[in-house]
Amino acid sequence: MRRRSILVAVAAALLSSGAAHAQPDHIARALADPARPAADRLRDADRKPAEQLAWAGVKAGDKVGEYMPGAGYFTRILSKTVGPSGKVYAYVPSEIVKIAPKYLTDGQAIAADPAFAGNVVVSSDTNGNFGAPEPLDVVWTAQNYHDLHGKFAPPGTATAFNAAVFKALKPGGTYIVIDHSALPSSGLKGAAEQHRIAKSAAIEEVKLAGFVLESESAVLANANDPLTASVFDPSIRGKTDQFALKFKKPR
Image (cartoon, rainbow, N blue to C red; front, side, top):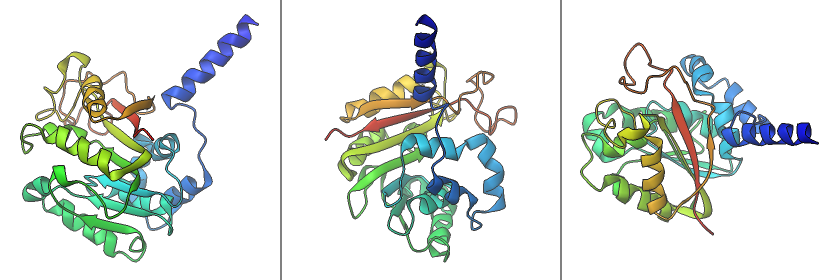
């Protein structure tokens, strides 16, 4: 009996950590889609999109708001995951466009690509005006939450953004935050220079907006990351320790 209890506890721990998630067919098809660039496919081993999407629960038909899509790695995957009955609203904050207009043009190019044009919509406005033309099932941000405390972001940016996310989501909607880990005691200190944020700081901010933390995934954890170097440092780039948080908007 004791052995069985131990096995059950281990299985529960694996599920809660994100280490044991089956890969649904719609996600497998999205990752195998030939329209995905070869360079994106090469990054799958490190970014583990199958595990992340399965844990997040993104499904066909979902309306997803993606904050800071960058070059579109997740935009393309999300587009194929939600399918023709879903939508991906890729939101590029105007504060970032001023610094790196490439991110807006990259997103627009994806939206114009016949392989993705049916369900990808790109928009740009301030962080505090984040939103979509319809209620969202999911808001997704990967490796960018710390930028709400970056050099371009005035005080209060994260608070305004999280409030906008809360408003944009349907009751019961999901808010996924994936980011580079900083030392637990560092809070927000590493956001501007190291492009990292302490997990506890992110959780505290998001919960203040009214969200409930539902689960975490440890699938992107890396115990060999010292958590101090810039994420662009060659010694750790692409291999950072990352946390993944799933929040829910109460019904």
